[in-house]
Amino acid sequence: MTTGNIQLLSDTLAKAKAEDRAALIAYLPAGFPTVDGGIAAIKAVFDGGADVVEVGLPHSDPVLDGPVIQTADDIALRGGVKIADVMRTVREAHEATGKPVLVMTYWNPIDRYGVERFTEELAAAGGAGCILPDLPVQESDVWRAHADKHGLATVFVVAPSSQDARLATITAAGSGFVYAASLMGVTGTRESVGEQAADLVRRTRATAPALPVCVGLGGAPAPPAPGGAPRAGPGRVGAPGG
Image (cartoon, rainbow, N blue to C red; front, side, top):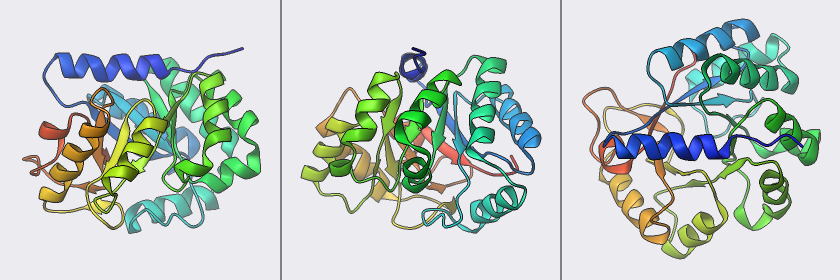
């Protein structure tokens, strides 16, 4: 049985921490502008210094995403992108760079595709895990069992509205890192992410000090926004075109 690259992900984040820097986690959707073009873009992002890349599985109703990623998803879907293309994207990006690649996806495509089939293929492609923004932790037992079986990280999303007890439940179930949404809303560039991100990071870390926290959802231009990567550890950015 092929094992995924959760350990590579953990080692990569640990290396960045040992170097006293934030790990850069980039996001690009598969199939944009084409499958080949998307693969080339991910390789370029890695060449440009990204430590980890999240490959988005395009969805017809991306409720977490802002207009830029929604548009990129629409272009990818109109181009006929399939889950097999997402797996190919993961495989070729990882093989070319040796770096950790995750898939970020809503739950419905996995549910329709089959959890065992999806996790098996993602591990075989060299994937490091999945970010699942709309899978409730209390309904994640089946996914986590298959992810653990195949050596894949299960990354859950926490928000500023998450209560401390809820944070503890999520971090206990997650692996790889926890995705801290810097604000209530959708993806997209902001001038800053604000102090609520710093508070969320602090509260999340208190529940699981050993689990890295990645701040994402509201990207900000340099210099880094308060509560962003320098305080949180890994920082995440996303842009369909680079």
